[in-house]
Each structure stands twice: as C-alpha cells, then as structure tokens.
Length: 158
Image (cartoon, rainbow, N blue to C red):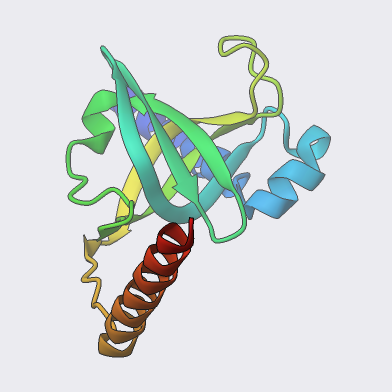
C-alpha cells in the first residue's frame, strides 16, 4: 500500500511539473521564435478552421488565432466533440491545444506543427447568417440594366 501511495505521489509531482513547463503561445510567437519553442510543450488557442482531415487513428486540424493558422496533429477521438469548423457559413469552435511544437516536423515533411496531447473546446461555434444588403441589390440591378443598355446600343451601331 505504501508503494502505491508513493508511486501516486511521484506521478502527481512529476505530472504537475511537466504541465507547469508548458508555455502559452500565439502563432506569431511560434513562427518568429520557432527555434526557442521547438520540442517544447505549448498551449495554443484559436478557432478551428477549414476541414478536419481524418487519417485513420490521427487527424489534421487547423487552428487560427486571428493572425496565422497552425496545423495540429492529434488523435481523431480528440476531435469527436467538435460541433463547428470555421468556413464561410460557420464560426468554428474555439479550442485550446496542449501539445509539443515542432518547427520542422520529421514525420510531416518538415512542416511546422503541433502534436496535440489534449484539445479542449473553450467555446462552441455557430452558424453565420449572411444578409443581402437591399442597397447593394438595387445597385447591382441598376448596373446590370445600364450595362445591358450600353451593350445593346454598341451592337446596334455595328
């Protein structure tokens, strides 16, 4: 029993120390200081954008923090709770990625990426409604009629 308690205490101490070493980073910091962050545990937060690319047990996700988008390699099951991926019609889920940063990943052709240990959804995304401006619609119709008139007049002169 003493050994189990000691083992749990050691795990708790070293586990806390490992996550205490993680650094919160923006995409600009990760790109500009890639050598410094290479191989380190980082926390990166942003909107999940484009499509999730499933590759069997693992998937690619792309996370944009407003400045740049960084590829995230993670277990497919980590993305199961995702409801929205950002595109023209949707605001993607805001996620926090905790993982190892690679400035030139040897597994992925030298690409800059994060190998995620955990992905936490901070905010659920939503549909984006696109409204058509009545003024723009009227202007477009007026320009269509004007251009049709000009083309007709030009053709008749030939």
